[in-house]
Image (tube, rainbow, N blue to C red; front, side, top):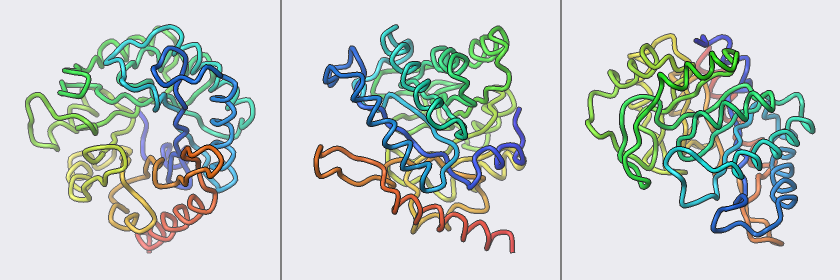
Length: 277
């Protein structure tokens, strides 16, 4: 499993940016032009890179409503093609894959095919009640598949009490986090708020840190430049998406802002510096 030093070096300067893919083939909102989806992803990746982000997660964000587990072949094919384009254009980036809602097997396959460094698994252990119904973690399958694919260097970033969900049988948060790391063998643990863009609880981050003092720990939703100081030094980093976006006046769609990303990274670095002083 990853340690904090390795993780901090991988996501330096403390944040994983997001490329939210426009709707892919087969999704209700797909507009029939995969080249345009790829171009939009490259534009967002370019903005993140220009601002200083060096680790990026790619997910099929607009494929709502999501399949609860296994996605169809066309989704895997499209994501593989797009992430290959992204990694070829930006080889300096550490790329990650999240196949929503919870297709860890496809995420691992895409990572192996594209050279991605990590995947996100929303429900890795336990069981959650979600808008897709009940989803059960399959850590035993995911870890064995990773070994079968000889992909032990692909990290598993896993959520504890993931957003848009509730535990089927809630236990103390620290206990759930320990099972995720120690029994599920997650390489890093993610703490989120209730929904995309909603703030995680600083106290939840502290609780998980106390339960897992040596585990790489990420804030997975709702952080922005003004709230970054609430989460460090307990967290090792964050996953940041919505807070970095503005509306493109030509398309009306959200796009990554270089200026907002620079502002956010400066806030994170200032907070981390104070925490080390």
